Image (cartoon, rainbow, N blue to C red; front, side, top):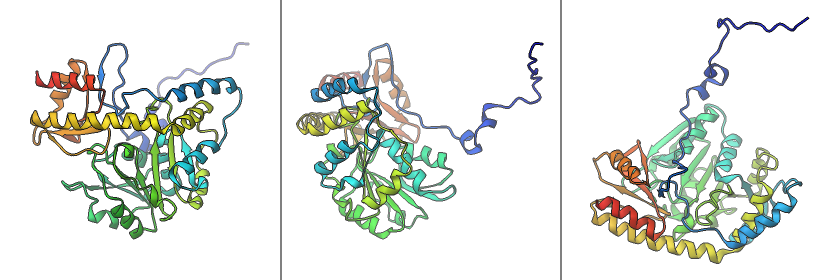
Length: 358
């Protein structure tokens, strides 16, 4: 007797949106910067480092391939100990993640229930919005002023978790550490996350608050200054007590053996990172001057990008025209009069300026 398959007449069909949680179906999702394939572009849209990672990273990755039959260290112990020595923090307060994006997700899942508040000044890193939506939490978006100082009203937000991107993206502005410490001490009932993805391109860091202010979490990434965007390594530093709670949410074996080996080699080669940072900062200064001479309003950036504005003018057509000439920059609908431009090599920046002048 042959098996009979029921015929779906359409009466019981459900759309994909009916099969997921309602708040997920209603989301638009995070939209990353374009990653082109095939054609050659000058790629100044995703804040990658234009210079290759340390040679030691490539050697370490090659050696790690010999042991791929084994699971990686579940807590990335060697990386955590290296981070502790490098930044003067307790290794028990360090988490290593699959990029800092995973660490942001861990923080949301561990601290905030559906309906509770997560607060951050805007405009800022747009992934925060997506993580809040995924959790079913309530976003508290407090606008920055023109000076990009922390808004006074932010500390009064009804929130369990605060995200402070510093230097901020996409503005490139930096809030002084004293202001961040004062903010965190005003809100001991909440976790205050200082997202320092771009801090190696700045002159100061808030890592000294780790452990001293128990509710502070500092995030770092190896994607920017260490040229390891493709390896996906993020670092979280906080008090050991809070780290123990966050470890409960972290996926087991969340960072591969190859990623751990590459991260350890990169962190041990500070000279290469500092050399690349110095080159990026020099090009950043030159690009800022040139863009201002072309009529753009450009603030002093503390990151590996600049925000070029023409107040009152929609620059979406300019972004499209640049793309037509194989130059990619980032345009946000939330900031229509601005382009965020990654600092590339001198040759890449020269090409951008050549096209803008034309």
